[in-house]
Length: 617
Image 1: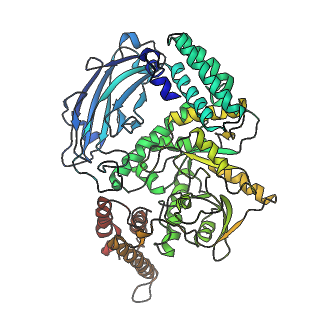
Image 2: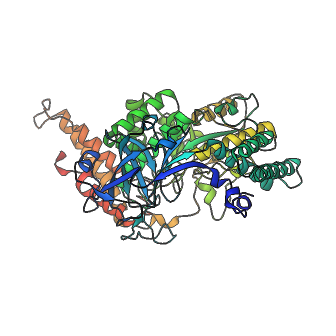
Image 3: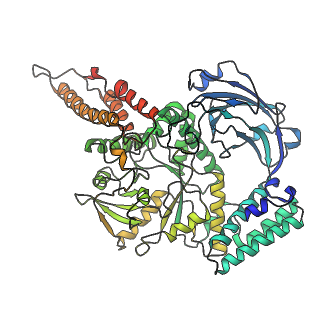
């Protein structure tokens, strides 16, 4: 239906042409200059802005792969746009980027290629004067620099990216709202059972919206009328209060941003991905109060704290407010089959210690959606680390046996157990579409025991997280459930821990879940246990040597050669640094061998220079 509308005979009668009220581009309004650091360097804000910038313009190409380019943007809002309700910068260089204030604070991340290309301009820009900020672009896409469309191939070292859009846009929020109204109503017409009255009603509502739009010549009045018609099917969806009805919701929507600590990009790029992604989430939480966002991996929080302190402060504020949830309890989202037992313990020791020291809380839920199989000892390790529940979804990728449960008890060899939930939508990067909500029940394999489920949504693997488009779609899904029915009801506003708290309470009150004993074997990616042998060898050597270092350092602390009290001071900071580096390289795309060559250059360097300094003892 959307396609039929957007391809109508006269462009003036398409909704997409009405989304923007006005635009302004060119050097009069968006003046650009650029500094291109040499040798693929990634300079800090202070370093980059200290250099001379040369004139730049839309249409130029920048590269090669993995290079960085800093743009100085001098923006002036035209007089005829000053009174517009909603102003955005639209920037698209087909690659990732980050917007900085003139004072050196990150305010927004950019994905490129049509994804996450808008930044809402501050109200201070509405004075007709010139305002300065910076855009740092990274010459890689969200999934690195793979040639063609095959993301797991070795990256092309000579890709170039064109800055094709840099303009000020005044957005018509009513037209944007109607676009999403029509999107979800169209999905209902297509995806509800053809014999249901709800599907037929959706078709009729959509036809009436099109008729009103065409009859009104695409005028603003016709857009307002279309939204009025849409409310007959969706209800009132322009506010977070859509989730405040007292009707039972069986799906909990959780925003998540899966950032592979390395995979198709090196560690250095991940540090920037974290800042891009999490700054956006802090902004979205302010704009959409219903959003509850979670993210794992203490290592990524530490990088943010080290390299982007102002963004880390924003995250800390959101954590305190309860809208941004550290989860998982481990240092990274690690492999669970190749590391030794002590390493599994240390993942949680260092992860939980970091979360408690920075945010005043330990994680209660182990969160590991993307690892290539799960050791039978994990429930035991989770329990002794203070976590009683576990989320994954990777087994939905099995290529032989369909894993039979969604919500169940998982039991280790020593009979320790955790409650495990695998989101029935079978992804940790859901696009928050109508079908994702529907599949959260239709693919639920444990309905005989419990009907509730999690929908984990947001751009992922290469970072990003939820977008405003996701949140607009979910508001309409909830409105549809309350106003029309048939679609399972989703709720935003509860955290992942809230979901598991309710599940545990049901179990305490007598709900009996099925039980799975032993390993959760992943029937795919088996080659990861035989590739990158040097990387695996370094890991095992590091584990053994760290045990020896700790043992000898402890002995040296206790006594000297003559049995007297030793003056030797235990090198705790050095040993902590070594452990953190070893744990970092146990990330689930690093240790198993599924990353690009650059990542193994990084891990070799960590092992050689940073992991085990021999002079420690």
